[in-house]
Amino acid sequence: MNAVGKNLKALRQRAGLTQDALAERLHVTRQAVSSWETGKTQPDIETLTALAEALDADVRELIYGPEQAERPYTRFQRRYIVCAVVCILAFLVWCVLELTLAPYLSEQLLRKGYLFWPSYVYGITGALFVYTAAGVFLPAAISLWGDIRLQPRWLRQMLVVLGALLLAHYVLWAVVPLLGNAVYPLLRGWYYLMMELSVMRNGSLFLSGCLLFLGLNK
Image 1 (cartoon, helix red, strand yellow):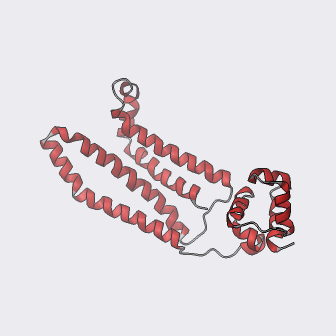
Image 2 (tube, helix red, strand yellow):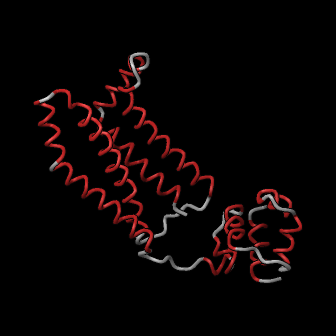
Image 3 (tube, helix red, strand yellow):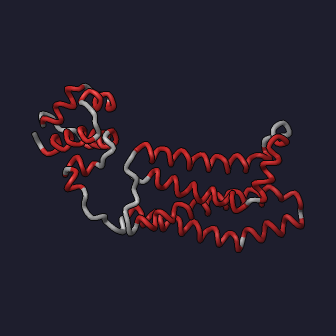
């Protein structure tokens, strides 16, 4: 039995799965799983990734074994550096727009009342990007020094769903004025409540960014 096959069998048993159960998760035959475990055939890179997902394990555990996979966390990984830099750039762009575009739109709104929509759209999209980016930046910055990845796949999926729901809630609030007279009166009270509670509104975007990062960070 080769190393990958031995590790695969150990991880399968750790997950409490039979060969049939694992084969069903991967949509392959039991004979294919048996061949991988005995070393008769070797899973390719895509199959290794699928196996790791099905076993709630890391690909490194399949290659090096559960013990050898527990290596010291590599700090300052490029993907986290890039993520943090992109978030910082988004914040700097927002600062520039706040110093230039926002005053211009406010001045035009006072002079010409019909320029309400440009100011509204800028305020909505600006908050969406800057607070979500801030939420992504915090766990990305922490990941530069420590491992905060969540192993259970179902937990990551749940965090992605929650983050997406928070974003959808904000988007729904933003488009309420565009829904027409048939819908707007029904949601008007909630709309103005969210308008007043800007801390809650922006906080939901920040939390959404955190949840999406943690859910997508494998």
